[in-house]
Image (cartoon, rainbow, N blue to C red; front, side):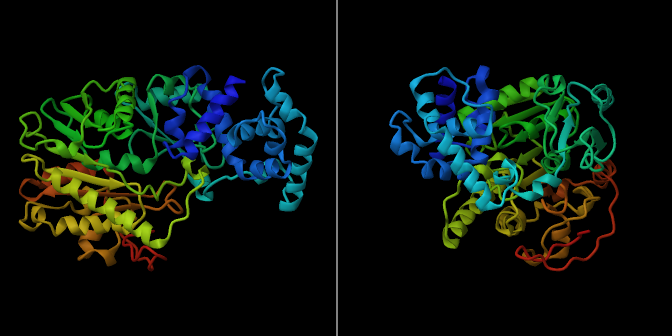
Length: 469
C-alpha cells in the first residue's frame, strides 16, 4: 500500500502547484519511479471521470479509512482501469472493495452518458496537435555518431520511412544535423543509447537556438548558456563545440542545477562548467567571463507553445484576461532585462534569444524593445540577417509588430499546428562591427540555402507573419 500512498502524495503536490509533473516525478525514489509515474499520469488522464464516479458512489462519505481524495483516485483507478489494486488485503483495500459493484456501476453509467465505447475515449488526451509532432531524437555527437545510432536502431527493427505512419520507421531531419524523427508513440526510456547519453530526446524547435548561436569548435571559445537547466540546449552547444573551449552553464535553482549537472555528465560534455548562480548577478567585466563571445538566452516564458508536455493534464485556475496580460508583461520585462544584460559583456558578438511561447509580447515585442534600447540604438547590436538564422526555415517573424520587413525575416517562428514542432521563437543579435561576410557564409552553408518566401494572410490572433509556407 505504500506505493499508493506515494502516488497520492505526488497528486497532492501537483494540486498544490509545487512543480511540474515531470519535475515532481523526478524526485520520487528511483526504484518505484517508473511505476509511480505511470499510475500518476494515468490517474490524471482520467481524473475528471474518476472524481465523478467517486462522488456518485459516496465513497469518501462511507469510508473514513480512505483518508484523501488523491488516495481514492489512485486506488479507484487501478480497480476500474487496471488489473486491480496491487496491495495486500489491508483495511484500506477492503474499504474500496466494499464499494466495487457500485463504483463499476457508476463508471458504466458515465460511459453511456458520454457515448464512450471504450475507456480511452474518457481520457484527457491533451492537445490534438501533439499527435502530429514526431518523437525527435538528437544523436549526441559527444559520445557517438549518426551512423552508429542508425545501426543501433536498425538492430531494433527500425527502417527509413514515415514516422507518423509507422511505429518502426524513422527519418533524418532536413534542418537540424544529427536529428532523427520517430513515431510519437515510441518510448526510448529503456533504450541503452538513451540510458548511456548517446541520444537525447529534444524537440526539433528546441535544437534551433544552439544551431543559430553556432559557437566555434575551438580551444579558445568561451560561451555562456544563461539559463541552462535541464541541459538539453547545453549539451547541444557542447556537441557543436566538439567539447572544446569553455561553456559556462548558469542555473540559479539548486534542484534544477543538480539536474543540469547530471545531464551534462551523462552526455559526456567535458567542456561545460555548471554554475549555480543567477546569470543576472554576473559582472560582465569579471575576468572569468569578460572574454565570452557567444551567449544563449532561453529565459522563463509562458510556455504557451508547448503542446505535448504532461502538464496539460493539470487543472488550471481560471484567469481573466487582465491577469494573463499582466503575467505576460512581467515576463516580457524580465526577458528584455536578460537581453540587455547579455549585451553588456564586452567581447560578446552573438546573442541568441529564444522562447517556447507563441505570444508576440514575449517574442517580437521583446525584440522591438531591445532594438530600441541604448544597447542597439548606438549601432553596437543589430539583428542577424535571415541568411544567418536558419535561412531555409520558412516561418518567420510577425511583420505587424516590428518596424521593418527585414527585422521580421531575421526571426524564426514555429507553429505547433503546422510545423510538426512545439511552438517556438528564435532570434539572434550580432555585434555590427564584428560581423564578417565569411562567417555569415559559413553559417548559411551549415543550415541550408535561403528559400523564396511566400506570402501569408494574417493569422487569427498573432498578426501578420512573413515567409510562411
